[in-house]
Image (cartoon, rainbow, N blue to C red; front, side, top):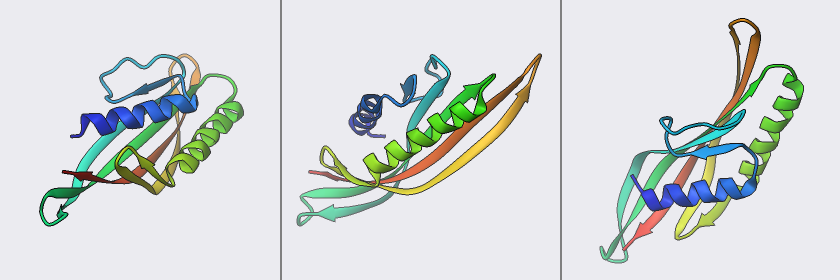
Length: 135
């Protein structure tokens, strides 16, 4: 939807150094035991701006984080929770280029996968509202 904005989000999250991999698409290779996937999901609103010389576009973006654990779930839970705290403090209300970013929700998830051994996955999903002026 907005490649420049997605790349700014990716770079900002990579600079936090809270996961092994940050990607813009589920098709990209995920390296390591933790990853964040970024997606600008939809346009919520478009309004004329500056006497119709530009537009104010409101996007909804999702940041999805996942950690895999084979042996020490408590350490992985702490890593996930640390990542959430870092993202909240970064995006609670900030500017990213000429965009205003606000966190609107955050949910945590845990699930278990049994193959030959038990593997746990700890995840979160954070929703952002992004307002960008395009002239």
